[in-house]
Image (cartoon, rainbow over all chains, first blue to last red; front, side, top):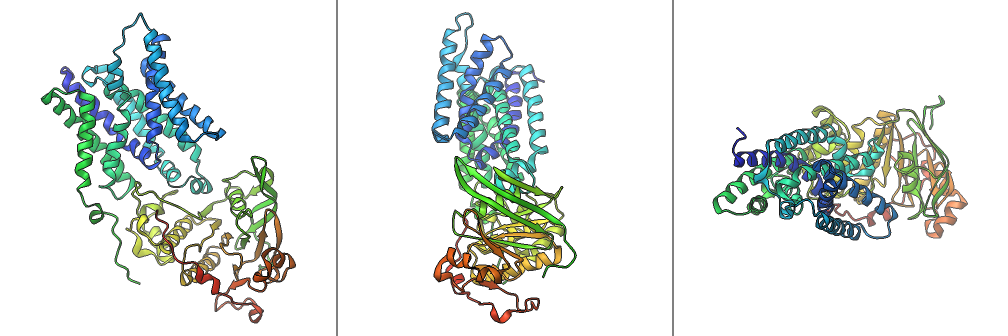
Length: 272
Length: 265
């Protein structure tokens, strides 16, 4: 059933979207979009380093993304520069260092465009195994840790006062984001990963009344974007990764037309 | 009004203080809270009230002194301010189970206790300041906490709401026998049922029953002439436990100044 490259792309992309949607909700709720971008940009450095050290590329990307997240935490504690500026420094310098290192690799030819914008049509059966294996692990952790993750998103102080560990929750989220980036890089590329996290989640907000509902809707909308984008790219012969993102954007724009307040979050009639 | 039987002590702060970057936020705080006891912290802005409460809840570790909690102490916390971003869809019903799992009947009972049962399905972003405050009370109470920590619980609530909330606190104390640590948003207001008032100004200025603190020279010195004689003590009409009703000055006027404002950004 995996014989056809297009079928493989559909299966791989849908699998990624199902994981990126719920995780992306946390990125939106915690205003971590730029943070996610920074981790994604560091992925290219991960690619270069894993080639130099001849190690598994997915692991290399994960490790570098996690390290960048850790570096940011340490820099934030120093509190000399704003988080915004720190992210800007880390984001672009890791991307630049990655590009420079790739230039030094004379023995291996690297398809740079493939890493920047992804090449979902080139996924192998092994890639699908990684996506679904990693994806199920990520979703399992998200479900298992859902309540503390959500509580510390609403208020770290309240969560801590009532016996939860918001610092641990934050760490878990960073590790999950690094994992998704490592898995997603091949499919949509380092420049577009964050969009798969954010756009479906942002779209789902208008259609949801609880956090759990928003996570599920985001997963479904992400999968719709992948399928629609891939068929669109085949029909009009456009780049597959960007086509998926454009499809996600179209779904988002359509959702803006839905009158949210009529559907959800309405106030009950005051009795008193 | 403390019972003769010694009650179980829930938490004890001994000479506790917090410093940040060489600056002392609060120091030398001694306080302990027993089951069924109400302790109220008052003091000007920046006097260390919230810092003290955070040491009690464990959000801040004391840099000097010690904080000892009863093992397994369950805390319910009503934060001073809670802004829930629009991007997070949250109904009152879902907020109730934020830090623990509770059945629908428990949720309904907790909301009914604060008179907010009709808000069950409402989005938290659409509640008024007073409604949100009551829901936060219900959320903290549903945990059946040993210790309830209230950070400026009546801030942003109009006058009648304020009276109702104080009555609610009294009810919680009477029915659950939990200890209550409350920060007053107003220098001059404490609940009549408060067992101990602690005036803070970077350190403990004075302490005692509301009536004693009201007369203490430190209180008058700290809060100036305007405050003299104006420590209003909210008293429940049917409370016969205080023999000195006639002496307790009711000055509710300043409470009207706190216009209701929205917590939604």
